[in-house]
Amino acid sequence: MRALVPVLLRRHWSTRTRLLAITLAPLVALCLALLWLSYASRQDEVRADLAERGTLLARVLADSSEYAVISGQYDELRRSMRGVLQSDTAIREIALFDARRRELVRLRGRAAGGPEGRYYEAPVLKRLVWLNMRAPDGSIVFGAANGAARPRFETVGYLQVRMTPDAMLARQATRFRLELLAATAGLLLCGALAYRLSEGFDTSLQASLRALREADAGKRLLLRRLNTAVEQERQSIALEIHDELNASLIAVRLESQRIAALAAQAAPAEVAQEIARRATTVTQLALGLYGNGRALVRRLRPEVLDMLGLQGAVEEMVRQVDDSQPDCRFTCRVEGAMSDVEPELAISAYRIVQEALSNIIKHAGARRATVTLARHGGDLSIEVRDDGVGLSAGRSDGIGIAGMRERVHAVSGSFSIDSDGGGTRIAIRLPLADPAT
Image (cartoon, helix red, strand yellow):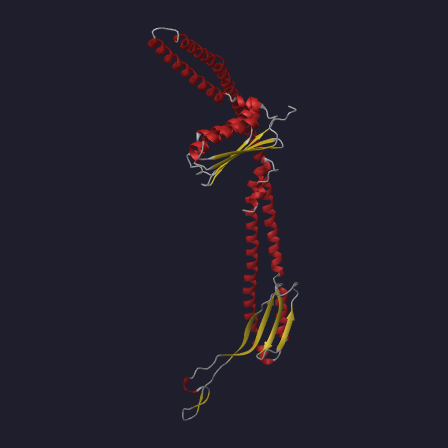
């Protein structure tokens, strides 16, 4: 049965065909097993019947052959044997031998086919009658003295019977054909019933699968729109910070510098110095806020992605992480052209690599990590590998990994993660959009 499983699950088979195969295959196997058992039992029944009949027939014919062997007259015995051979087509041959195994009579029946390999033999026994005769003085002059055991029978010959199973097997074959016909009719009836039932089940199953595919497609579309909306909102916030907040911080810095310049002309000197010192402090705070705003803008919307493209943005991100982490060396490899990757897919790839590097920094404890971007035909492949401690059971379903899965799922890609305790490998495939569409 285990060998049948790959056959029953062939991909090019329809769902209905698989259902029929799964339903009917065990039934056919059971039916064949029962038929084989019936055939084997009939064979055993024929052999047992032949053995019983052959043994009984040999004994009966041996008992009736006593006079013929003793007297040497075999005509009546032959007629009796011929009658037995004509009445039973399972008897192949009857042979009579004397006590020295010399053949006396051999008759063949009209049974067709070859004989069995074995034969059934019974001894031809001569019955002995003992008389004790005594002399006038009381002594035994004929017989066995002192009450010694005297044999009652003497073997004077042997009778052999050979049987042939062909006639009985033919009768059993007829019965077996009827059973086979009935089993075939039952299987056909079950097959027709299963075919009819599978039609409705297949219809409902296909409808359910279509609904699941539509729901999955809707989920993918919703995720893509959600990611797009998030990125657009991030871009809007980044522009607001860049255009409004940073501009205000620049104005604050310029005003504080002007106040510091005017404080140098004020009197007394102590007040002027205090004003200048506080104006310098305001300038430094404005510069710090401006730097934080720039960093926040880069996190919300990596402008390097717009300026350098996917390849340059990933290489720059890996370089910055490598500079900030002295305990781990980060390297980046790029294979193929990345210039025509659509913006939506590029930002998804960038965010995926960003999250993977963040997980390595926070949890892996690695000494080396490698990011590989490769373009193969219509796919963009991303591989992030490290030699850290690997994933624990809790981390394998963390928020970061779940976010990467959702991003990959939104663009109909594939995601796999492997960890053997000696490092972690994340492999991602993202299908590229057709330029013609």
